[in-house]
Length: 225
Ligand code: A5P
Image (cartoon, rainbow, N blue to C red; front, side, top):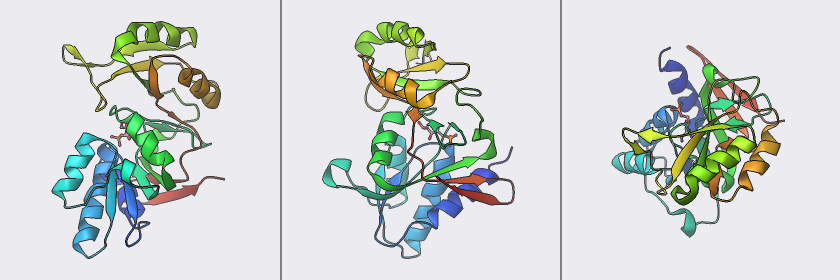
């Protein structure tokens, strides 16, 4: 599949950003197109400031001249544009394929409007049917987290980066959990959040407001009911 669906969804989403807004900047290959689009709008005179969800996004935004804010210095973000690994009909999502789930969730929850950009391969009937669920955990007790996640029905694997464990921007590990698929996403989200040692889960429940789905030559915009 070409990158065109991602690019079309991203281009559509950046047009939802208004002058002087604070924009949450997601992470991933789809969001890259949105950040590039915002860079172009900035050159055309649109004034925005961004809040980045990862070190990689922060670097990209800075290279494009997008001024960045620290989440601690603001009370709210006007609009966030981010991608997803999977999204179901109720707009529940799996995120964290790139390992940025914790900052992505914090930025999304600080935002008035959350716009998710995906291509049609991300649309699923049941979460967990095509992708694993990433869970960020403390390195100190990661093996115990594997056992606790197993009790919830998840087969968790420590994400690796070559020979070493993959490290998040927060210095933590990611456990990629296969659930085959997830029966009740809101319930599983609550159960995972209660496990000691878990920093954040990649289940995003009731967070997406608008979903822009990109196809080869068109987009479809869906609003949460
Ligand atoms: C980053 O950690 C993720 O949550 C991404 O937003 C998600 O994996 C989507 O990435 P792509 O746009 O690269 O598929």
